[in-house]
Image 1 (cartoon, protein in one colour):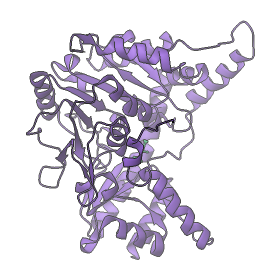
Image 2 (tube, protein in one colour):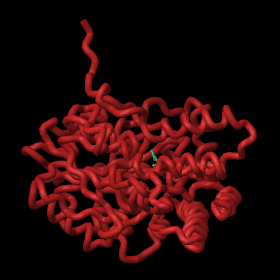
Image 3 (cartoon, helix red, strand yellow):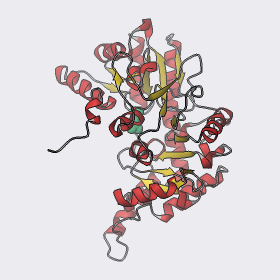
Amino acid sequence: MTKINANYQKLPGSYLFSMIAKKIAAYSAAHPDAQIIRLGIGDVTQPLGAPVIKALHEGVDEMANAATFHGYAPDLGYSFLREAIAGEYKERGSKIEADEIFVSDGAKSDSANIQELFDLDNRIAVSDPVYPVYVDSNVMAGRTGTYDAATGMWSDVTYMPCTEENGFIADLPKERADIIYLCFPNNPTGMTVTKEQLQRWVDYANEHDSVIIYDAAYEAYITEADKPHSIYECEGARTCAIEIRSFSKNAGFTGLRLGFTVIPKELKRGGCSLHDMWARRHGTKYNGAPYIVQKAGAACYTPEGKASIRSEVGYYMENARIIYTSLKDMGYTVYGGVNAPYIWLKTPDQMTSWDFFDRLLETIHVVGTPGAGFGPHGEGFFRLTAFGTRENTKKAMERFRKL
Ligand code: MLT
């Protein structure tokens, strides 16, 4: 008899954003006239920049001609893109070689798949609240023990609380953690670390032989000069850290799909090179991101591409400013929004975050993401994204004033 992977049965409910989508669909079906403003999932709303569109058109034309047609992409990525990415690391002072970069279809799949490199006996540590993919993918693999519905916690996961008291930057774990997931600028809190704070994590990982999975999907949103864009800005990160990046949030590729993972060649555990293991995995399980998409990705590194990204990021950061200042004016306690496109607000009157979600949906037709969906310490908080249109962002704030 075929036996299923029983770990899937342990997952509570559906994936957070699928659950929210279902709730919105049900509400819309019952209230077809409600003009819903979606500031929930971090999906971009602005069109792709002109340099990206130009590259896509050129790529399509190349595919129409036998002399310039491209079949399977190199499984680790085209060298023109890997070189461009390595060039940007170099410009920021981090030495990353092109062959340490693995091009993929996005940061979500890489951050879910990377755990395959590690034995099930490893203990993972996550910030709490946290992007749910890190935990769910480890549940599917069978690394997280048993779920306690009362606390919303897994027995074999170390949760590192991110609270108002610690500025939403977790303290180092007190117990041994083998695989540490960090995301800065942070999803969902919108807060980020200084280089000195990040250095402490790198030192911890090197001392304890741990590996840091560093999700830097939102680095383009950093506005403060003392905040690191990459973990490789820290001393010793090449021997303990894997970095995952995305083209979704900076260049608007949520619908195109492109990302990459960096694994330095020095990063070894148990005498094995994680770089070589990931290359082996990529080669076996992946046929490479589409040529035209990689070509569009490379266009992001040209001077025109960089200017276009700056303007796109600037657009969303103005939304973040509008949300942050409007909510503050209204008396809400608000975090994030300065180095990230997420605003993390405290729910009023100690409402639970799901109650606040329902209240916003039902009374002002604005959708956000309940903090509890990101982990137990997310309870009492609510995330709004700055990725809406300017018009909807302003409209949402007007509606908040009427609450
Ligand atoms: C989010 O809203 O947290 C993100 O859009 C999720 C993602 O990037 O997969």
